[in-house]
Length: 189
Image (cartoon, rainbow, N blue to C red; front, side, top):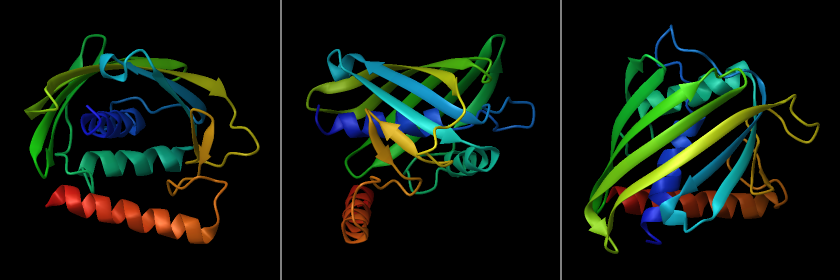
């Protein structure tokens, strides 16, 4: 399960950061501070709470990354309009398997939205092949003074827009960046 959890969290993060603007008629998230709460049976009752400061540019940049599937090993999500929301499908390739995901998302994107995600990993990892997660997001108001657009707090830890924790030295940030790049290369093999 320990190897599947990062994949689930990564895919959930990609979807949760996507502006639902894959087409011109989709709504954009309102600028400001958004709080998301993710729960999953695979997380054994734990939740991940994140807060992200968004402006129009940050939201658009996230959309571009999500639509292109760049650096994620995932196909660009296929989107379909539903009566009460949207539906997304994607396939993510890993070195040792494939993760196929289906998500539905409902809400007004001005004050809140909910995303339900179901997926299957082939072959199963540590005996687990199916997963299900739910993300509830709500607009909290203006961004606090200590956060700039793109910054995110995950369970209280401030992460800058480049994905690095806010309280580490430039040398530590560079080391973490190199480590993350190595991990991505290993997953692509």
